[in-house]
Length: 51
Image (cartoon, rainbow, N blue to C red; front, side, top):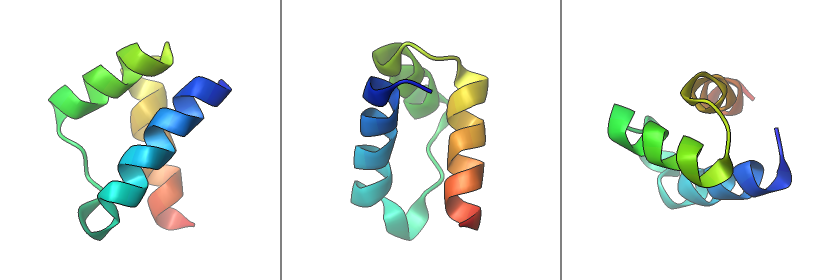
């Protein structure tokens, strides 16, 4: 995952850490902003919530 994607996802996670489950629309928007796939975004959030 590239730095831009990591930054976008981390910012969203920090702002929404009490309910870190983005909607499908949010996942799609973050994927587009970070130039990654929606699957990568979903996997990143799954891993982040576990750790």
